[in-house]
Length: 155
Image 1: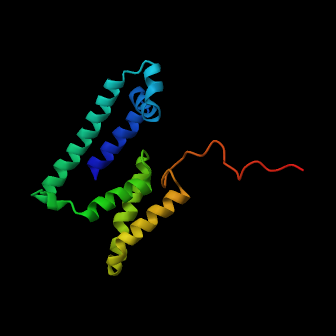
Image 2 (image 1 turned 45 degrees about the horizontal axis):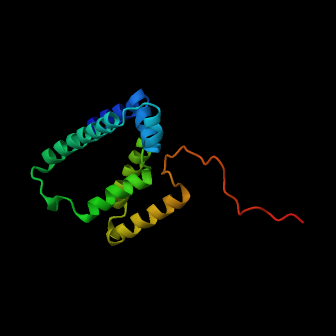
Image 3 (image 1 turned 135 degrees about the vertical axis):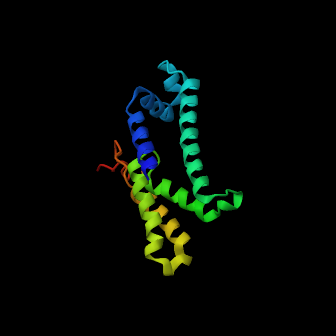
């Protein structure tokens, strides 16, 4: 847990540095970044390196905890759980992802008798969140303009 908190803190701090701003701009519009003089290969490589480092840290702790890792260690349920955590939490929102992880990992423990409905609950939760909060649980972005039903006819 301490390692997860440290990595989360580093990621949040990096987002507020110039490289984090460049990553966000690159994510939104790669061509505009190039026109601003941002070195695209360097930014891509730095993002790839950081994500690989975080994955390596997580993999090292997972392998240490498991003792043995094989392809059978990762079933469909684990993949669906991770996908549900990211979608419910909101891509790019570390706090939302942490809340979604607590919710998704904790809820099956509370409703252990209803284990056969777990995937149904994940799917329903993802659909509800995508309709209710498209950016995830902790999304702070609001639409600039709301789309209406169209122009009204004037008499």
